[in-house]
Length: 257
Image (spheres, rainbow, N blue to C red):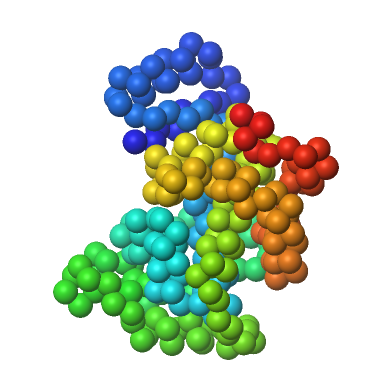
């Protein structure tokens, strides 16, 4: 039901109002967004998938990550969603951005290897999972072997993760990206980010969205978790400066609504 109303630099206020009114007539839930790659929803979801890919490369499996996120409340895990949407969509975006990607930044190439092998998701019978009957996802030994090859190429010794650790990393990544989006003025308030994820991306409603989750998890605990993870990929895990300000002032995201 999500409809993001994207407001450009010269968009007239009456045009924004018309867009919001049209959303109501269509029965949609509208969220105002500024202009950036991915706007609000896809940008947050990209951070979610990046965290999932880091977990994968560090030792988790697609099935293990998907099970943890379903246990948290998502109807599908990130790799299931990827297979349903088609891997070639994100692959095209990664190829488009390749020339501007900083080689010093951590990059997980497993999805690229899958696409190069023709694994484009459920519609082709193979993606992160195999689909022997065209519908039922089953773990694919070839995919697990490819993941192991990429780990070995980077010298990564795989480790295990609990479901709670998987959830904490994935949702912390979403909340941290949300804080950046707020600081940039892409979203007007934390609740807009929560609404986008609830009505467009299957975030469990009883958790309230990534920003409300962050309030419940604790802003200090979130900042500390991000700091702990930052050495592995500073460009991704470094806490948004807003978090330090919130800790200093004793505020929560809810107070910014």
